Length: 404
Ligand SMILES: *Cc1c(COP(=O)(O)O)cnc(C)c1O
Image (cartoon, rainbow, N blue to C red):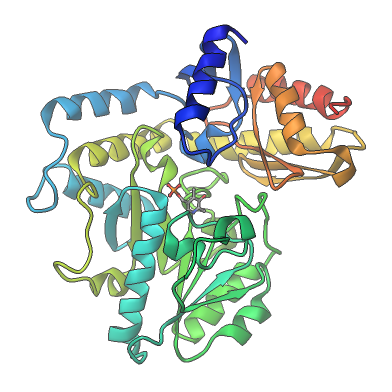
């Protein structure tokens, strides 16, 4: 590393809160599946900013929409109408088959907003006594970093010394429909769950789980809230991961790739009932639904469909997983994934996944470890077969070598 790169890293460490532990690379440019560091080294991005850059870095059509809109109007607040919001609503509703839309900014804000909305629905539509609403969530969930959300995390690192936390959440194991049945009470308003647990290490639930979940929620008048902030918008090879299960959520949360990585844009999508309970003054956000965000999100959704990225994610995901499964190395415990949401789980004896990520960096691949022993692989959805094969070759040599 050059002196200037070491300087940048040191300056970050000196002034910044130390709430991340980045891989030692300083990036300065991106295009499609590739990123470059300040010294001109090229890497295949196998993280895609935790799936926010699904459309590829600096997608030219999203960029053009952003620049064009930035010249015209960026922010009005919702005190006035803007000429992009209606079009954003119409297009996201048509794409996802939703009835109502609440625009927010970060993913965590969408989750918080959904919690507020399903509670209000519980009191005003379901008839739960005021203050008694319960929401069921899963162990090892990841829904964001705000106080309300970390309060129902089961990860000690996420929670410790951030309390006291809000009551009203019950935690059950992921993938266990019987546990859901047992946890539901007359005061249960919602079950909040990820279709595939991303941050927990790409954990795919057993087949049939979500159809049972759907039946239980319907039978008990409980809103099924699917957090598709990471799995949504093509990542798993379908527009929404719920489509693999043949179900429909009552509330769907989107974020990350909703802007193709240009800008924080998130949304709560619901049937008429849940978001229908919100009245003027009861919820809001200065930046939520701003014209720049709407223009960027419209372009991000458009290119996803027009350029066949969802189909490509299914096709390349299959190729990638098959290639991973063909790698013979005694470091590997399991290869799993759906679409381009993939994970390599190492045997604990193989050492920390971070070591392998650093070895991959040296070969031109950026990937990120999660939970000590898992390497997550989630390239932009525009990846080609040749690029998948290129990555597989490097993964194979890295996983069979001693990195300790
Ligand atoms: C990333 C993520 C969030 C939080 O999104 P932020 O934009 O970081 O607040 C919530 N849920 C899931 C499933 C995520 O992957």
